[in-house]
Length: 270
Image 1 (cartoon, one colour):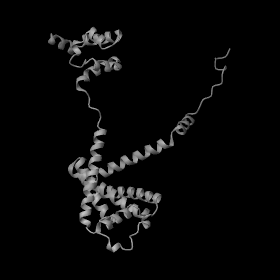
Image 2 (cartoon, rainbow, N blue to C red; image 1 turned 180 degrees about the horizontal axis):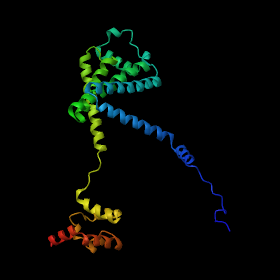
Image 3 (cartoon, rainbow, N blue to C red; image 1 turned 120 degrees about the vertical axis):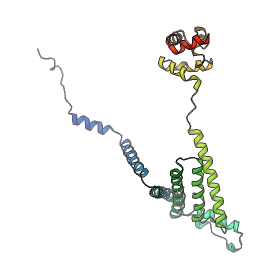
Image 4 (cartoon, rainbow, N blue to C red; image 1 turned 180 degrees about the vertical axis):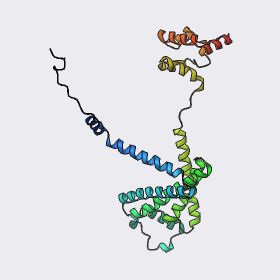
């Protein structure tokens, strides 16, 4: 008789082979994303230790580079259509408002280089001012966002040639417009990004149901207006009126009876 191992063939997989198999099963996209996040984290850590001028310069340069790439891509897709928007033969006789509108149209229809320049200026100035405001004020709020948008809008107007005959006034107007739009977007984002407010009157009730594994009956408590205040006063009939089955009712009442704090509050309410 054998030792029981001859009935089948046992193949031992070397440890290094298993390691290679594990590595081959890794998603290459996930690996690249993890490496990118690691580099980004180290870069932000290094940047936070720099002085304000260095941080502002680096943030402005990197944001401008990103904006230039986006602008060049947009310009490549749309092509240089600025040549289609040419001043009429009697351009000298046009009023200043008409010429300003013509320059605005040309600013948004340039080729890749023009679009890269315009978007780079806008994103770089915005990021640089935001960085300075955040370091000086210690926070990032709607005021800082609007100041950065005002600066980027004004500089964008001057660089892109949208200023018209009165460049200072048009730059001021564009800056105010950018600031108002950015302020509205910031406030809207804050409104939708805030987590739901925790209902303080159901904190202990929610904790009790979670500990008992009865989270699904939280809606029954709320529908029956059974909250933390009524928790010590719970009875079988009250839980039954809230459409809670017999088994969960027994668990809840046993928890209330065994909780010293709830028992003390029950005595005080009598």
